[in-house]
Length: 178
Image (cartoon, rainbow, N blue to C red; front, top):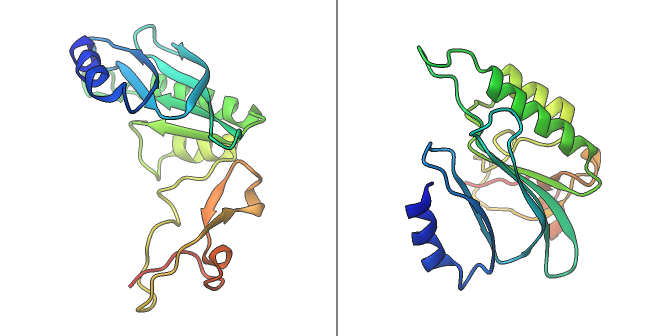
């Protein structure tokens, strides 16, 4: 996202999303975050590469609670240009360590340029103690009913959230759909 995108998005989103942080760049690694919730101490950081930013901020919800958001888009491995993923892996693991040290719940979002089954993702999950929403979530065929509810996952501490139908009074099974 570059300056053109920033101007276009600001024009359309600023009225409804009153809080934002952006770093428009011409190199495909520009980032913009628009929020209805207040951003507390937002930072644009360059963790590994001097031209690849990340957004780090706390977000205050309407009820006063807060969480920490890491918005990242590390550079991918590219054949004949950057065949190894050293920079990507380093950025992902730096964020994992920061997430693990956080005293607030954490969300890591963005294009991580990685797959759910990679060694880097495994290491990220182990270090950060976060859950991967691509795993064990979503709908599975089980019955003709849809059950859904949300609650804390006590086995992973307060950083994690999971869908549990028991919290909505719909039984003990995780989310299921026909």
